[in-house]
Length: 175
Length: 203
Image (cartoon, rainbow over all chains, first blue to last red; front, side, top):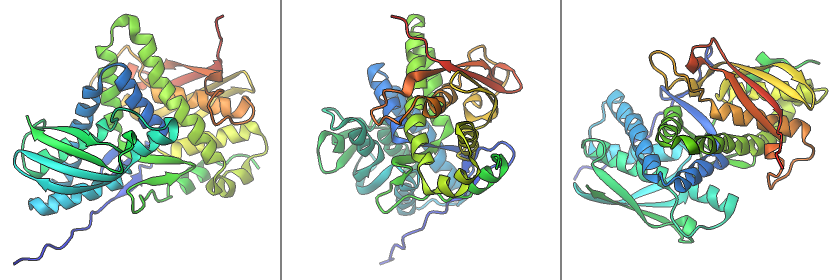
């Protein structure tokens, strides 16, 4: 039996000298705080546009992960899955662990969440799940890992830290 | 000693942004994320375009407010940090120096290549941004809508930190100043220009 050796994600971060823009693995990126991300999330909820926030996250994270795997010539499923989990943490979004991924569904567990923790720090617990950006990331990650078109999966939170659960559980289902 | 903007940018731009074992980045008393700029731009652009014209001022106001609260709380955290104490504080002799230093830090964080071009203490500030990610959503041509909601919020927040008295953790002073964007790279100007003045409250 072949033993799987955990890959280590490679990150190059720099502030471009002329434009003073920050790049993470060649992608224009910016440092923001939990106030900013939770207020954008609250705005999406107030405007009843949480699907938009989720979709925008999916679009952008699909590009981020796909670019990485193309540039590093990675096609192995397990390697893509491991790197995707590490990338989530590099972005500061928390941790995710894969319970399982099939061709049609997946369950992903997050014991630490930037958005949930930030929300609780700012406003306390909430009666509804709020991690729409995380859902978009999970949907994007599944499409990239399984080499499916973007938008193949829809992700839900069946447990949520912000609601008082001890972990967030994302459930993804093929549309 | 006057503020040495280049030295501040050179020093702070070299700091490492690493997440801990929980995948979280804690710094300046806040949790930090480093997401693609296109994510923020896409959401703002698509939300604004979907919003009914009558609700547009409120939606744009909330986009600005997100940055204003971010700028107020994170800005305060930055000014209380060891990094600030070692790099900026030795150059700052008064509130105006602090503001110039804060804008250098803002540039080093990758928010915008921005500096203060006019400052009347307590009253008015004009800032110019020669490059900023919020203008990047336009790939060809120009747009009539000026979209630098994040810069507007940050500029107004920094003015409040400078001139609205003691920092208030509840954020009651966040909106003491307002910022209007009068020029924008996205609209065909050579730079973005931002005018910050005391908020006028209608009773």
